[in-house]
Length: 101
Image (cartoon, rainbow, N blue to C red; front, side):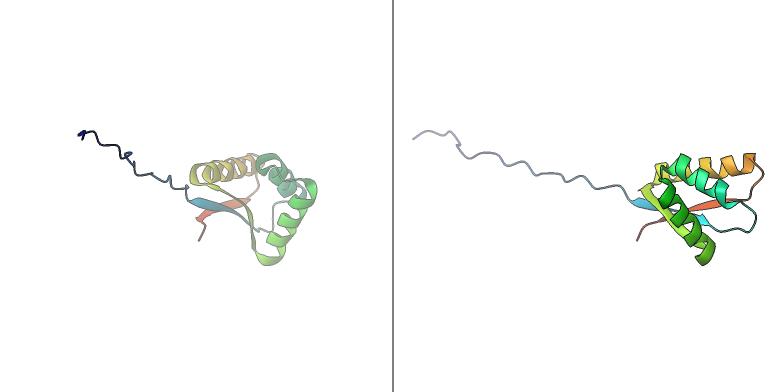
């Protein structure tokens, strides 16, 4: 008999972990015009008009509303850009980024 090993080598499969996701949350304030909030939601977060209105009204009524969920770096970038756009116009609009549970 031959000394050749005919068993196939089984390589352990490494399963890639999905990146943790983070929520971008719109906070209500009494100074930023609703139209501007909708414009930011449509421009930065790519919401359509109906979605942007719903998010804006929910934040207005409940104090905060989740806009969307992204990997951490994307969530922070989008929130920072939205806040910068508001500050440029003199509005106190705020977004926060928090880990999804």
